[in-house]
Image (cartoon, rainbow, N blue to C red):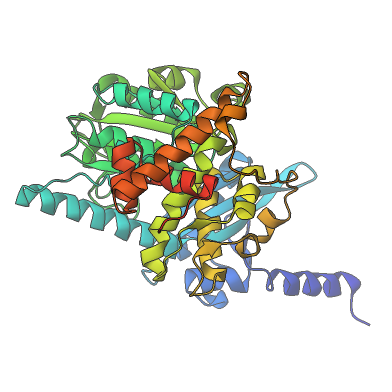
Length: 478
């Protein structure tokens, strides 16, 4: 029988060769003693090219300052998560996210273990997007064309609830200035729509609008994206303008700003205070004129208490505070939003849906909408996929299962046409509803049942009239 320790070592090696992350083990001198199959795949090397070789022989582009393995061997401290770009002996450029751990035996440092995840293709794709965006910006500047990329205006924002109208009013006032704006709102409440609307209503409308989700990019890459890079600043670095340079003269929308690490938040604060940007590795500074709109989907106080948002940065950004209400706080807007999405999807699906059945609308009104307006739009789109081509009304059975399973209040039985003279003095609400219904019917008759003209005559939006037609059971045709 073979040595149990040898058998265990072989079994352990087999397991490490099965995992989907690279594993690289070096001794105290930096010589490779284990190198799994996945790490060989990431590096584009054969294991025999790496085993028993020093890390600087395998990765000649790295130094004692840039190599995470060398750093751990020098300090004896773990490197929790670090992006590393390097070139191997064959000239292949690779980018990985590494976790690197020191190894000790009886208190003595004996080596280092690195676990790596390949993100080369992701970084390359992101670089291509940045380059294309910068080329497009430069081309438009050269041609003298409008360089803004904001599609939405305040006229595209749908809602009549007090909380929503208050947010719109605040945003419109903020559009007159260039002060920073801090938007707070849950996912799906329309933070970027408000940012674009403010840009398009401002004097910056003919300049760039650039949006960046700070949580979508690894932290080590974000600094170069935000401030730009200079060729030679690090392995693979090229001359590229950052977000501030690209957005100069316009608006920079930074979503989920609490995802930035605290050091980068401090650098962002300096740019906001001085209006001066220096690219990574650069020796010159340049003045930029950018309006910052920042956003996050959590309560700022919670972010401050957790230490993931700097107080000084928050105070600098929170000059204008915009609170976007969740859909649960603006339920009266649900029918308007539902009708908006129906009109949006009709041409896309080649259908002629006119509205929601009362039972389906009741489900909409009873649902909590954790995903807010975005989720509502997805629910309407889902219903379009379930409805038959000849149908014109979204019924309850067309809705997604999570809406159908939501407990609903018992529906109120329909009433006969009321006799206005029979109402006692206290029933003013019923009198108003009856008067509104009759005014709508009269407007429809006078304008040949053209809903757009009738809505214009009544002084309301077309979506609002569509909702009221469903609410009162008024036929759209004579």
